[in-house]
Image (tube, rainbow, N blue to C red):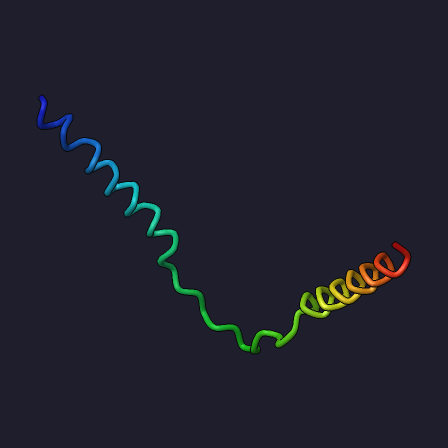
Length: 63
């Protein structure tokens, strides 16, 4: 009975690892069109950084 308790956790761990890896192992078919080069997030982030720099400059000017 001690041997069963001793090996139960490692075996259960291996089984759970195998089950979780099955979900990641699927192969998706390639899409017929290439992905977009820009999704607009980089542009939005650039505008946000520019506005933050302008706000920082205005804050330092009036402080």
